[in-house]
Length: 143
Ligand code: RB5
Image 1: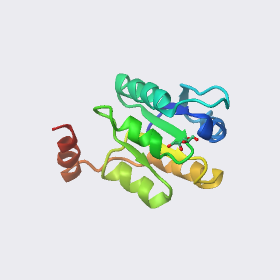
Image 2: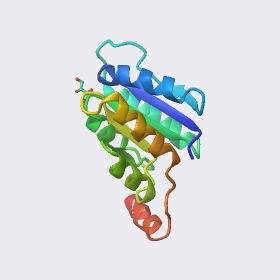
Image 3: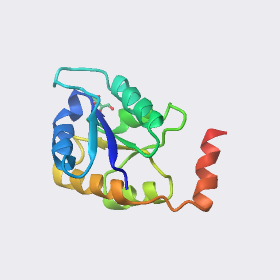
Image 4: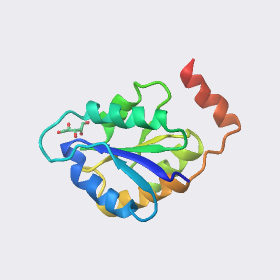
């Protein structure tokens, strides 16, 4: 269970970021790394800020939101040690935690509605990595 969450978005994910912060405020510590307005901005800046914070704080995770989730995931996955996954449903969310030990969840505000996004966030935070053969596989990412 992740209790500390670093969250970030660009303008395309700003509204969903605010909803998720409100969703989590009683259950988790959430650190908002921006954006702080809906002004047009560059998603890699926030992907990097959240990813570096997650790497510096073992046991934490990140949530990144842009229009599709894809740009955020591309930018985050450039950073060694980050395993960022775009999730659009419960199954992919559960599997990316159980098998990939994803440490950053990426969402697309223009793709996934607020109800499904809330369910995905809850599932991502509680689903444990299964380890075992999957640990060997994710370690191969770093070769
Ligand atoms: C911004 O218009 C949009 O390109 C961005 O939010 C994201 O979807 C990129 O992957």
